[in-house]
Amino acid sequence: MEKSSNLKSRDERLEFFDIAHAGVADDAACKALGFGRILAMEKDISVSRLASDKIEDSIFIGRGDALQIAAKRRPKAICITDFRIDRSLIAAMRDREIALCIGFNDIISSVGLRRQAMLYMSSRLFDYARKKDVEVAFASMANSKVMLLSYVQLIELAKLIGADDAYARRSLSMVTPGLIE
Image (cartoon, rainbow, N blue to C red; front, side):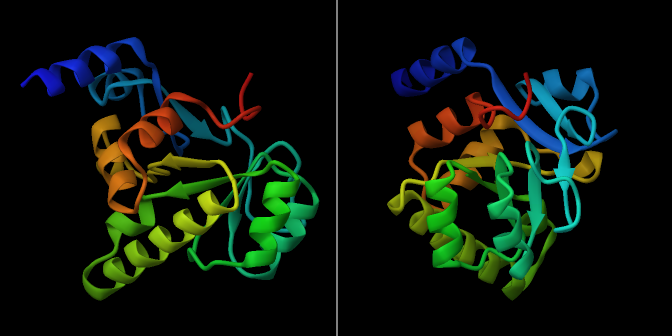
């Protein structure tokens, strides 16, 4: 009982942040889910999906060869949608101080064996990134209101893929450096 009250009092002092698609979250949802702010993609944060987009100072969301091109152009964070580990990409992210953003929307919207595979791959990606000293941020990346998660649910999902409680809370209470002013 005392442990949960300590966590609750600690959470009251922190302000948690999430990232979702534009138009998904409003102030009432933000407050109900326990976030200080839910950042809207394209409104509060620049998002790039193609290597030809303006990548600098954005979150790049993609997979495959486009990730290497994006890393050279220094986005603030990269979200790897297929959760595959690319050792040279992770090394480039570490050297250029690019954060890894793990979005849970695709995981929670998948079912069955696909969900298990995505959980396993995201867990391996998280573990490898942390071993290589790449900062990892967690976000719902919700594309609809029903996909929004509370801060507690995000923390639990982060713990499910291998983050400890303190790291998960810190990740949600800090906005990826420089994404918003």
